[in-house]
Length: 155
Image (cartoon, rainbow, N blue to C red; front, side, top):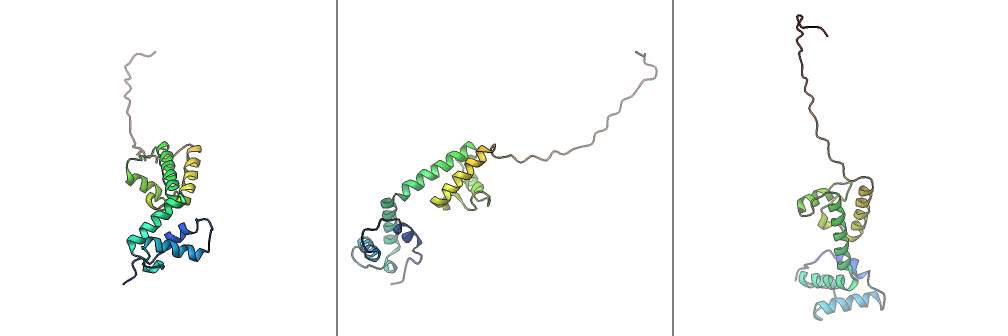
């Protein structure tokens, strides 16, 4: 059987947020056994579906999913106040991909980065909002000629 999951960062990020109640290694084995139906206690032997189900369960257990939803909603509301069309994901992603904002698409922003983004958005709002790019005004030269009639009556 080939290893389906090679990056366990999601699991360990959630696992480290669990409260200590027993030996960490034993707790990890118990969690893996639960989600593989006692087939294995090794993360490396989990299928992708089992791994995703396990991580989804840990997200619910640690409250990460609710917190992420709340932070995403908060950032979207702040963007809306700044005049960004939040019904258009392309515009949201374009805004967030700016290196001065987040440097990545909105969906890829972590909970911690959402906190930073909310702070940046509040700062932008406090300083007067987003500045619109000034359209270059083309200055065209115009010549006006005024003809003076020498025979006109003088005032």
